[in-house]
Length: 134
Image (tube, rainbow, N blue to C red):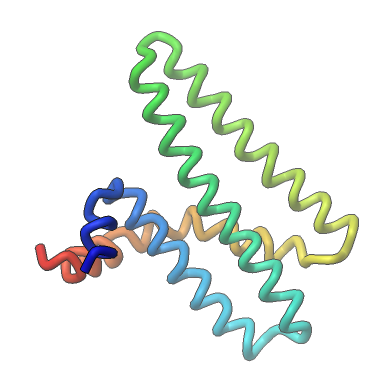
């Protein structure tokens, strides 16, 4: 039960976001099992995108925390964080397209787990309430 206690100390919104991203990745992986021709390339591309979404979610939370402490400069901090996240994913997509090692569309699909998480939030919230017995 130490794992549950550790998770309870984690920022709940971020934890719900991570759970939603992982659930979306699993669903996409299952769909790819039936639809993708190159299973290894598909899986690597998808999970790289999900990994970048997880990191982007953490970066977004940290950026918002920093911005809320700044007051007047909050808008600049949020804008810089937004531009940085999108520049990084754009760079990853361009590199994956040029090297053809990964499928950039599937990397983008994995990264979109960040967006899908917003819709999954009520589900992940209820799930975590059950896990934490709240």
